[in-house]
Length: 340
Image (cartoon, rainbow, N blue to C red; front, side, top):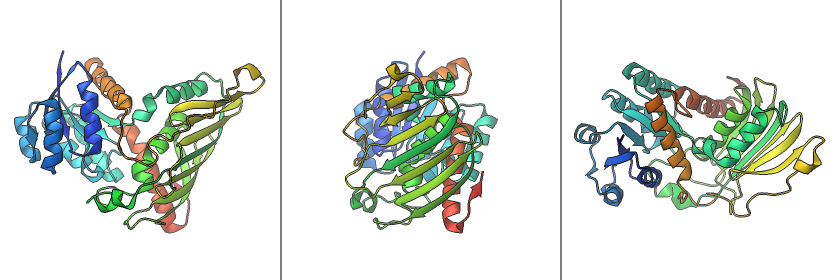
């Protein structure tokens, strides 16, 4: 069976969505919609489909079973609701939106319309993350104790100055936490469970933007595990993203989505001294060359529709990382820990 999919957005991430969709034989791309017609036209040309500047015309004239939304984050809920009201399944880029209130509106709209809602948290489907999840799931690492996570990337000033929405509260919802670091918050929750409370600082240290480019936080999880979290776009030249997890039976690291540094209590044979890749993935450039993760999310979404099950990351699941990101901002503003 072929599923008709429309691409909503004309920027870098929609380029990734389009290239991933082109690799899936079950997909028929039917149109691309974006505010910048030069970029939108280029993407539409790659797929040989019409380009739209008007969202209403896109939904009205472009037949689709699924829409992949890659627009600025603050538009995700409104565009997803517009799609759901037409009976279209919604697959939206992270974060689900920029406030939990808007996320709830989208979740409720999709439930009311009886359509699927999925979120692109593609790092979950990486081989390394899946392996690390299994190490906790099968008890190999024991009970979660401590996590150290950092996203120390660098963005040139032009990354923000040439964009109308990046680094703004209304459309980006934040800076290094909400845009770059949200994937890592999602992985921490996915691996360790629901957070209980957080204390954090968010600062604008280098870039001329409304939102933060540097943040740190301490997170307590319902399991009792603790985590430290750092996210920045001010760390030249950029470092590999890393999550180091300690359990009661050992430790393991995820370095740019590759499993490394496994040490298990009483089992020297299973130690892995691999320190991970030397070249940081996506540390200094926002362009994604490898779309295998996006493709896997799309393939899972197709299966979720076909089997009538939740996708790998649905709206309620994606809301948790958004809630945590917003709590870090609140803590930074009030100077107090925030209970989730």
